[in-house]
Image (tube, rainbow, N blue to C red; front, side, top):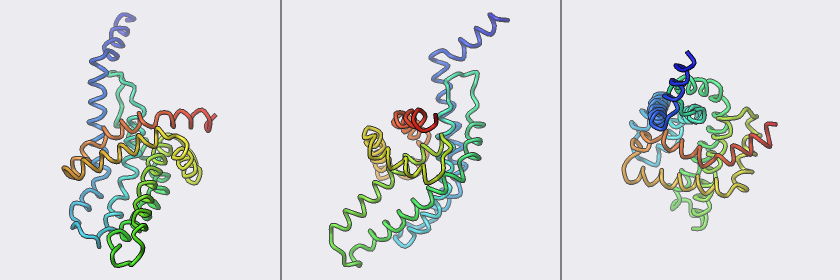
Length: 229
């Protein structure tokens, strides 16, 4: 029996098994990510690309927050053992645990982006100085990097929404490698969307989140050591 157990552990933990386990986890998490975000995806698909639809696009994006958080939760708990794979259970557990907390941050961020987006598309009619456009773009970029930190923290830890918001700002200003790494991911995501479509970006969602997890690892470890003990 001991020899059998040892053989099973070796089978589940070898290099090939770890690759298979990772691919399986990414595919299943991607599927669940698309399923939970489907109402928003359908809404965005039906919307015309018109500036007047910016608020509606923001409403369609609301389901994305809990879906992304659940995917982060599941990917973070991946251990690479082929005999101990439960990504679906981890995904749904993360969704139940984090949906409410994520929406407390995700919805205000979408509201801010909506205001910025409407201001940018109507910039010429507003009659404001040209530097105002640069400020609006800076606000949009900074808030996106902030929500990346906030999404990561609220997906993996249990804090109050206002504390998560403060921690996200703190790490945005102090963890430059994490900030620059997330900025690079945002640029890549924008390039993928521009060169192909939102659908391609959506199909690569779990891969992007896995890279984001690796990028944010220093921040995650700091939160665990300095704010949870």
